[in-house]
Amino acid sequence: MTTIESLSYDVKTIENAPENSKPALQAAKNAYGFVPNLLGTMANHPALLKNYWEGSANLDANSTFTAKEQQVAYLAASYENNCHYCMAAHTSIGQMHKIDQDILDALRTGTEIPNAKLEALSQYVKATTISRGRVSQDDIDAFLAAGYAQENVLEVITIVSLKVMTNYINFVAQTKVDSAFEPNAWEKLMV
Image (cartoon, rainbow, N blue to C red):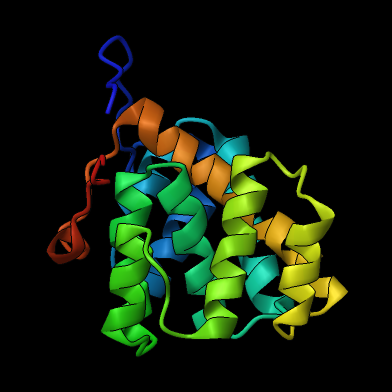
């Protein structure tokens, strides 16, 4: 993976973050017991942090997907964007949601998921990510044929947009994986 050496971002804490970033960092600490490095890095730009934090909360409150499906979608997008941080984090979150390890392993290696409906979701998210939203009719038809609805097409766009924010900042900032996610550290195998 190409690395960026000319940029360096402080991982902000509640104490030293810009004022407009502090509420989201405090909310994250309340929710998780710690402030993830991703959010501490996003705190350097309060609008980015606020858009991500509030967007994620809004998606959680209004999702058409199950928690398992959301994690599959997050992992599929993060895989295609080659995001070391989000792959580790969402693998850990997927484990908390009791997603079968063989499903997580497939997502982490880019291989077929041993569940047809989740595989269709993963493939559609990947198609959306790779094509930058310009999916084919065949992509949409396969997704809908797997049992998803038109509303789910829109949610995939929402998920991919959230992952663009996180995956891109993690690349630019080379965000260090938090110790909570280190057991699931990830690097894309190049074949």
